Amino acid sequence: MKKEIRKDVREYILSQVNETLARLGVSEQVVETETWEDKYRGTLHYKFKSAPIRQMPMMFKAVVVEGYMVSIELEEGDRLYEYTEENDLVVVNLDYSWQSFSRGTNGTEIGRMIFAVSKKLPETENSKYLEYAIYKLEGLSI
Image (cartoon, rainbow, N blue to C red; front, side):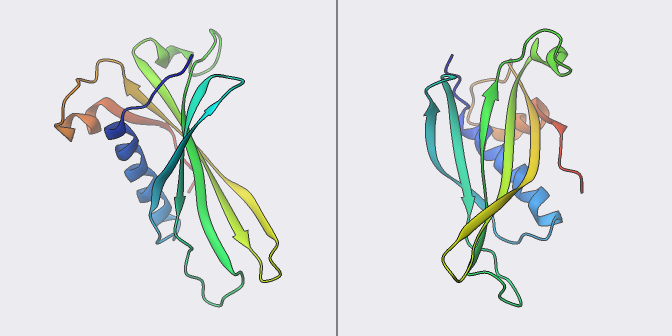
């Protein structure tokens, strides 16, 4: 089942991701770049990426933070299942990717964050409700 994540919710979650990355020393902000559908699971993925991170000394040609967010469905018995009665769960996966001077690329996982988004979130342009209706269930270990 294809579950769309509202634009204002995506923007709020990305602001929380950027705040966490700043605590990790990443000065570049991530921004949403594209949306794609997983044909096998039928889910929408919202991809995001940062500008190349400034490095000193210059060890790699480019280093970026990238990832995606997706709304998930859980089975009964999952440890976070109790939250799904009143909330939609959004998982954010974060990765580092770097390009070496010899044109090779590689990457590694930073971690994941899980947010609970209230199903009772009103359809409004007033974003003050977002901080009360969205909360972090799991964050990165900093």
